[in-house]
Length: 71
Image 1 (tube, rainbow, N blue to C red):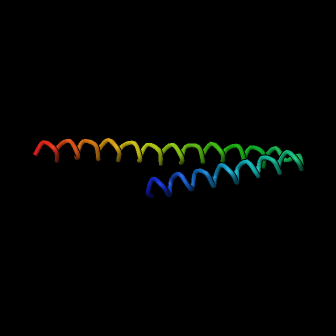
Image 2: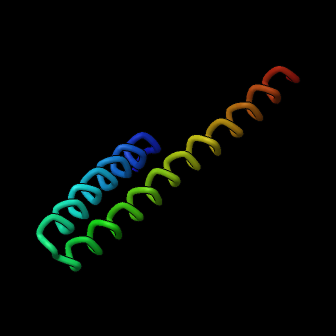
Image 3: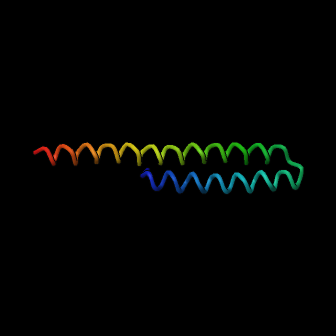
C-alpha cells in the first residue's frame, strides 16, 4: 500500500475505533469499548507506517538529487 493509502486507512481506523468505543460506553459494552480502542491503536500504527514511508522516500530523493548534481 502507498504511504497515502496507509495514512488514510490509519485515519479511518482511528475514527471507526473511536466511534465503536463511544458506542460501547453508551450501551455499557466493555467488549465494544475494547474493540474500538484496539482499532484506534491499529489506526495509529498504520498512520505511522505511512509517515515512515514518506520519510524514507524523502531521504532517497534527496540522496538522488545530490548524486545527480555531482554528475
